Image 1 (spheres, rainbow, N blue to C red):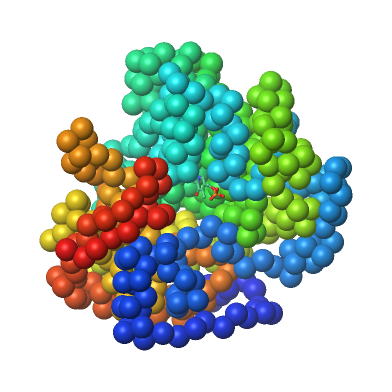
Image 2 (image 1 turned 135 degrees about the vertical axis):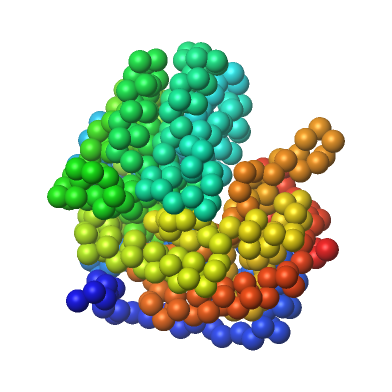
Length: 456
Ligand SMILES: *Cc1c(COP(=O)(O)O)cnc(C)c1O
């Protein structure tokens, strides 16, 4: 049989509230053309993020009932710790309420003025936490990774020659650690090869710089390695994930992605001194060391989710269903980042709305019309999210203008996705009618969450 089916049955459902394009036009104006400011009840298909939006399994919900809420030494913590250690092999496992809390703790310790943190591509909260500490964040994407229309297997890879040049320029003593983000979220959800992780580690080792994984989508990355990298076809996703972690000295993790839960995260690492400092900070900002910012039941659900996410029927369905959306859009002529990534399809707004210049936010214009026309919520990943200003207040745009359609895990069926395809193709056919936007209000950091816009 060639049809890949959802490897689950649906036991509990949540109704969707229907709205008309006229309703949504008014909603959009009230939200100042920022989908983060729309009420979720007014959204038909929510592709804003795959973060914390997974459907949990019956076993995870059973774990929620079974969670041990002891303040210290909870049984659920020890199950969580064993699951994370079994997967990553790291010595110290520190729960946090989500990924950015792990980042905040880590960069408070190793960051600060005069420090540099390289990554294949920093995620927005990672960059924000590094910069908040006073350190500087640098991206080292490969040339092929920067080209949305270029098809390659591992477009998420680290640009190792550029990284090494950078290390020599700023000096290894000023680089407390280097990150690799798997999969490369901001770079289009593209995977990183095992060879690239191994080689990055080899270079870093020469300069005595530790390697950390931003491991949010480790299972999706492992599956891409299995299906695309020579020598891995017969290995299990779990074995591949373990090998990925084996090259790293630590990781930050948002359990809201590949641990299939609605809230949670962790920091895991081998260094005793950093771990001691991290636990002290954890107690100040998150909670005691055996719960971080989480309830015992959350730790149970994460432990169970980390097992389920490596099931290869799940991963086949997951990667295939995102690929299905991408292929149908490409067949309809829609420009997307190719090949499709693991958790999302990224529309290439520069080609989709070529008549709108970056400083009028072509991605945001597409985001607004997908919502108005079809009730689909997506997110701009371009000049709104990553734009900076020069000394004269002129926008410095990032290399790509993208719109992300992130697919929540185990939530939508194929007919939901068929509807999304229909809406995107409709908006694409009318793309010359799209109008640019200007920002009327913005925060100094992570402005995309709260910025307000007006049509030009
Ligand atoms: C989501 C995400 C984070 C931050 O995690 P939160 O749980 O949202 O705080 C960090 N890095 C990457 C790559 C992510 O996708």
